[in-house]
Length: 247
Image (cartoon, rainbow, N blue to C red; front, side, top):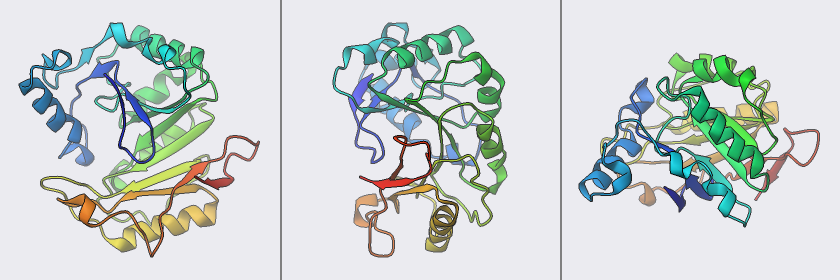
């Protein structure tokens, strides 16, 4: 449940939880559900329950065994703030992230309400980045919830981008990732939606990362936007965390 990752904005994944339930439009073509179905058919022991929520207690300490620093996407196959995950288990995950200070942990959720509800009970070291998924204007409230979370780096994953987001308030946000949906049934993404978000990030001094155009065969379309790639990350080495760096 820990693998090197091909996701452009991270380096590895760590899945102490697998399985989830759909909550909004962005979940319609969930890649994790499709992958879990495939792994279940292959008799992978971690997916005996298919995509039903499953806690893997034996994996909560795993990043402590990785000595080389890396960016780690936490629960790429689930959502750490799912209502059925006990707060005690979340505390255990956070204990590991606090202890493994040489890594950077990237957590992403669609359940911003629970995140906000319990955030004051969690210890937020500088190496834990917290993000929310924002696929369209119906879920902009997730950004407002995230703004109140005491993480030192707060980010948005606007993927799949399903509609225009022309008036984003990025106050308190340090990083924005944008990408189109990929795979079977991928819904289209307009270039104007992407350039609008890119321009808003530039205006508000927020790091911008363009992940992909997407599509049924995403590799045909690549990830260049107006002739270049956008691989900006938040700079956490100075007090001005909104200063941009390009890796």
